Length: 130
Image (tube, rainbow, N blue to C red):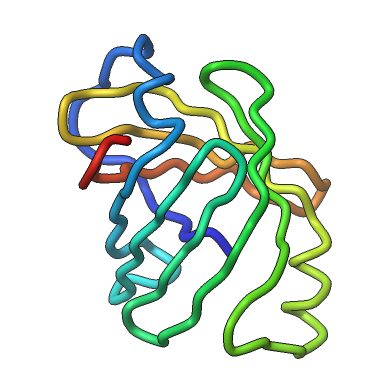
């Protein structure tokens, strides 16, 4: 599902979360998938994630809880992966908390919503603000 990345660099300011509610963003590499690269296009209610390595395109609904927190729910993907582990993972809600916004990137944390989930933090580069 959403690309899970580790945080790096200095801590950004938390203000300005509204600047990244919509736009085009890029993430690359993490401890789970170090060679992966994604482009994320988000409007207020839909997020599309494009994995440049596999060609997989995921579409998720976005529900904003406040200016700095939102939930993602899986809608569909192309090509569709019907393996049981992927199908089960897609039933989950992903809770995302934006922890800081700078001029060229923002940082976020995936907040655990299930007892076996882990919290992960990452940085996303801002390509285009809408």
